[in-house]
Every structure is written in C-alpha cells, then in structure tokens.
Image (cartoon, rainbow, N blue to C red; front, side, top):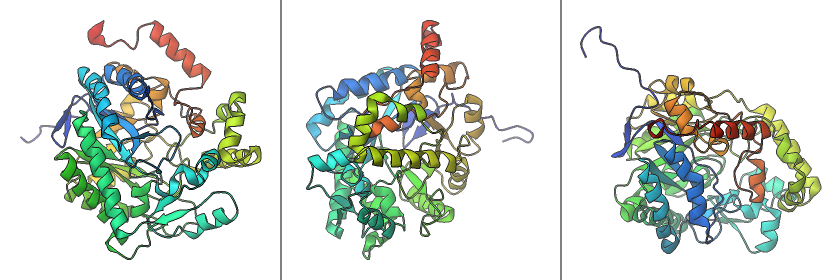
Length: 440
C-alpha cells in the first residue's frame, strides 16, 4: 500500500466469506433456543423465528443447537434433533426462505453430555427413569457431591474410545443431512457445558486414550463432517473457562484456549467463536440483570416446581440465579479480549458475541478484535433488528434483563417478556421502522 494511505475501516455492512460462503455483511444472529422440537409444526416454528431476521438484512443466521443423536443429549426442553434425515430434509423449506432474502444459514450441532436434561430436570427424570448421560470420563467431585446431596441426578455413561468415534460420526451424519437440506455451513456448540467443552476442559476430561487431548474429538468431528458433508464451512465455539467459580482449580486458562484455537484453525476449521464461560451451565453465558419478572410470573410457578423438583428447590435455583447476576461481569463485549488474542494467532475469521447492543460498538470491534459480530437475546426482543443496526446504525432495545431466558427451562419459547421493551417494539413496528429502506 502506498506510503501515507490509510487502511479503510471495517464496518458492519462490509461483506466477508467463511469457508468460501459469501456473506453480505458482518452481522450474525447468535444461536438461540428456538424451542421448535421435531413435531409437525417444527418447520413453521423455525420459519417464524428466523425468516424475519433474514428479511431484516442480517447476513448470517445460526440456527440454535440441535441434537445429533436420536435419544438423550438434550440440554433443555423442546430442542430439535437432527439425527433423522427425513425430518432434516423438510427444513429445506426454511433454508430456501432464508436464501430468498440474501442471507446465509448455518445449523449448530450439539450434544449435552453430562448437561443433559436427565441430570437437572426433575419432571424429565420422572418420564425417563432409565436415562443416563454420556460422559467424557468420571464426573468431577463437585458434581458427584451435588449428586449425593440430591441436587442433581448424575448417571454417567463414560464413553469408550469406540463410543467417542461413534458420537463424532453422529455429528458428521447430521452435517450431511443439513447440507442436503440447503444449510450453508455447520456450527458446533463448543461451550455452555456441552459435550465439546467437556472434552476440551480439564475439569471434565480425565481420559487415558487419544481423546485425553480434547482437541482430538474436534478433529474426529471434522473428519466425520468432511466424510458426510464434504467441504461445507465448519465453525466452532472455543471456550475459555476463566469465569469458573473459585473452588474449581482445574479449568481452561487463556493461553490454553488460544492454543486450542490455533490448532483448530490449522486443522481446517473455517471460523472460530471464542467465548468466556464457566465449567458449569450458568449465567456466564447470558450475563445481565437478575430476571425478577420471569421468576415472579404467576403462570410459571407450577412449571418451575415441576422442573426443579418442588417449590423449595425452585427457590434455591432462583437464589443462585440472583447471586450469579451479581457475580459475572456484564460489560458489553465481554468476549472481545479473548477474541483479540485468538485473532492474533489464526488466519480464519473470528466471531465475537456477548452482550453487544450498540452499532458503534460493533464497528469498533471489527478489525480490532474480530471479523464478525453477533447478538442473541436482542433478536427475541426484535426479530427484525437487522434493519435498525445495518440501515440506521442504531442500538438494540434489549437491556439484558434475562426475562426471556429463565422460562425456557420449562419449555417456554424465547420471547421478550419485559413490557417496556414490547411496547417500544410495537411503536417502532407501527411507524414502519423495521421496513427495509430498499422497500420503502
């Protein structure tokens, strides 16, 4: 570049490619729980959830975590399974609708491992008394203690080497079905205490075979995806467990996680999503305010009691939720530092999410810490948020109050439950703010 010429700034509206798939801009919808299940209305549920986001101009949509096995592995109610090719083929209607608006859609593949519902969901355990949880190795003592105290129901089925390869192949088969249905790429759920994080984490992985190195599981998944789905773009979250409670001594430190990211990029992963999490499924992922309105909702009290094993236990979970809301730093863009460290050592796109709400903040992060920026909960509040971010450069309405998240433990769909936000969205809709400028 000639002396004195400045490098052009990267903005949210600039195009980018991931693994050869062209994106019209650098805004993505982070994976959320669509709670679509596998019933007769599943496809329409996905369309109603995701098409408005594509219509609003968002370049990349990550469909929420879908389970790759025909049984077990669901970490929350009403998650969708993608182990049946006949069902997945019906989702071509969804992918066609997303493509009609010029957007791209990747599906996120997942398995809960120890985090599966049979461990924590009391009503589910009653209906499935035989259920066990796939385990990387013997669970850590903290979970065993919680099991003895009756707080959870731990029934680990420690996978053999052959079992691990079989699970990796299940990811690959699901990826193949997704590509056949028109999905543009695959995103692995690599955090939130799912099975991928359990392989990577020293808190969970005490194996003595080749999978003692948790990256080997991700390489086995890569091989299976390439076998069943060809050269489809492959993305994964990469966790760093620095948000773990102080009584957890063994967890992924920053340097370890950066090295994991480097190895995955060198091994052919097409993009990475670095995220700071805990070793447990807690508010380190959905940081923000204590969701008082959701916990006090009179229509959900019986549901909470059924899920958590009685009203007393539900109050205990509520108290823990209140403490976590105070514990975790909620500064918008809390993953930016980790993203920047990863971006320094890889040559693939780095995606940043975590409390981002403001267009100007997104533009500052691009080029400095990441290559794409994503939002999750704001799309519950504004499904057509892309218009205001991309066209008008405004701020999302979402205030991270988390009233949308807690009810999902009961199987409720993700939606904004904060009246002031709902009213403001209604006002904006009435004024036509969410209409694309090209349509006005």
